[in-house]
Length: 134
Ligand SMILES: [Fe+2]
Ligand SMILES: [Fe+2]
Image (cartoon, rainbow, N blue to C red):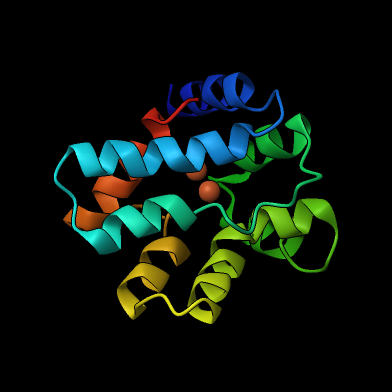
């Protein structure tokens, strides 16, 4: 059920120029509308900043299907290919946010945004991310 929902969402926002930018802006907007603090809004805006521009629909669907297989996911996330960079986008995005001067909290939220949420802030980002279909 969860996987089907994610694949549907992925298919809906995978098409069209600027879909990733709209997704990021929408995620931040949802969080702001729920009274999130500035760190959380910024994490919403930057969470997918490291997704490769060349990402294809199959990369997105394959990534959702790999979520229950962390060992294989980890192995395929190594390297500089588009799929590897896509799978590794939370870690790479966290690094990018750190380079841009984001706080440690923002960096950690981005790094964990595809992990099972452990805090209220992580849960809020996770939910806004899922709901933010441009
Ligand atoms: Fe993401
Ligand atoms: Fe996202």
